[in-house]
Image (cartoon, rainbow, N blue to C red; front, side, top):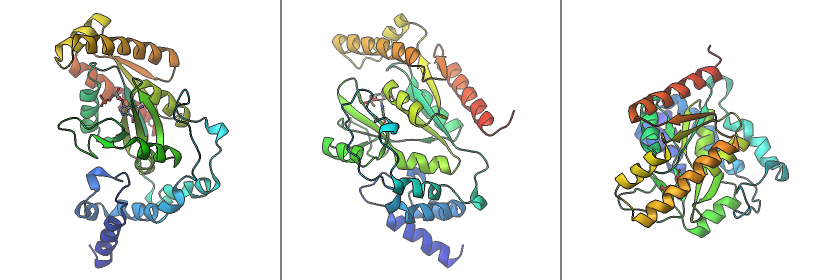
Length: 290
Ligand code: 5GP
């Protein structure tokens, strides 16, 4: 490790914007960056161009049905078009595999969070940390479970084009996927995992047509109701509400045509195996391997 490498890594750590979304949760300390020198060169050029890659502010209405604006009515700003190539690694650093964006959705109580974390572990996927306006629950960690934002901050980031998708979930709080960390990881050839609702899935299908979307389903409505009760977290009223929302979400996922695969979670281990198998197969297809 040369002295100039160490200096560059220290400068990268110092350049991270204090109020920005963390570029790489698992490599956010300079020590780890030093171990990952080949990637640092790519990150360095991205950080240098960070100022240029921000969207020109476009007023977006988050209460518009479907949430995200139609790209055709909001052409990509010139500054973004110009810098798009700068976010890609140079030919010398081309990743061995192309990146793949994977979306996991499913109603609450179906086990999707457990499946998502197991996919992250087994396939070495990068889990995208969402932003939300809901309050932090006990035990949740800022930047690890979510970025907890005020309504004003969330609005400001919508206007600045910082979300890949965003939606008001269950008619209450706002949730959104920070764009920059996802685009950077995909450019480095990584597998990026989003755990988002169906509204978000539909938006991703529109803005990233090559993404792979999976929906986790319960074996039956009766079984879903049994699992929601079994969690022991909610009152009967809340269970009824969640059950109605779950049925609506399943119906929408089936109708919208955004999802590639439906995995039925009869048995958790089998559902994890099946989900991983689908993602591996898709990755190989994308990489051009039969
Ligand atoms: P919770 O508040 O229970 O953590 O999440 C509630 C719902 O919000 C879940 O269905 C989850 O999938 C969804 N969600 C979490 N993050 C995002 C996001 O970034 N975008 C969208 N559209 N939905 C999200």
